[in-house]
View 1 (tube, rainbow, N blue to C red):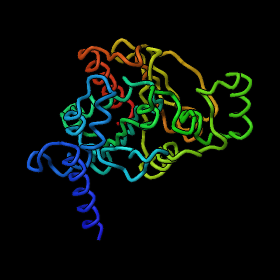
View 2 (view 1 turned 90 degrees about the vertical axis):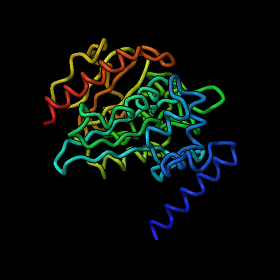
View 3 (view 1 turned 120 degrees about the vertical axis):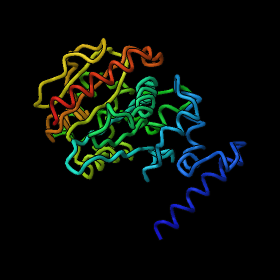
Amino acid sequence: MAEESLRIKLLAGLAACLLAGGASAAMLTPSKAATAPWCDRLAARLPTVSADACRQSAVMPSGAKSNNGFPILERDIAAAPNAPRVLLLGGIHGDELSASALVFRWLRTMDSPAAQGLHWKVAPLLNPDGLLAAKPQRVNARGVDLNRNFPTPNWQSEAPRYWAQVTRSDPRRFPGKSPLSEPESRWVHQTIENFHPDLIVSVHAPFGVLDFDGEAEPPRKFGRLNYRKVGVYPGSLGNYSGQHKQVPVITIELPHAQAMPSDAEIQRIWLDMLDWIRTNLN
């Protein structure tokens, strides 16, 4: 029954692509057919990521959807049973276009020898509704900052107070009315519970630094990005995972939210990150 259901979904995705004027059925593999309708929409927004490159990344709908019904796309790249597990996330803030684009770019090299030996779960765009809004926005479709919506200790008292007093009720940083109130943050939370990552890497912009939450030795430098503690906030993923769950979180803050780093810098950040992972997780 599960195989039949998947076959039906793939055929439906292919049909939608053909109706939209997409490629012929002979040109699309099943995985590409499943992502074709969504990749076309994402490519219109993401810098340096074409619709074909999105399809070639082999992301698939995870089963979870945003408030507006856009699928949370993911790719699982397994390794040996005891291999370190890395959860790589992008685009938790919809107006940080380069953060999502960078993860899509890295997905092209996931099958290379440099990335082997690790079990990857990758979600390049956690906030599709924010990205696809008329004007890209930090918050999701319900106006919630997903990176303030995780269930850190004392969230009910600390998160609303921080939002009101420190941010002066900045709508771009609204934590929601309760932790995990949003389907996007619930997907991350459930993935952490099910996947059991040894490390989470979350890509953001535009501070141009590295941040780290956890007990391991922080990375000093990835490419041109130097380590600098940004801070810990009620409801943030770094606070929830790195400090509360004791699963370390590397936050990569790219220098620009819309402009991408050079190809050489993208590769340098990637290789430096892999070196740190091998040194600290193996």
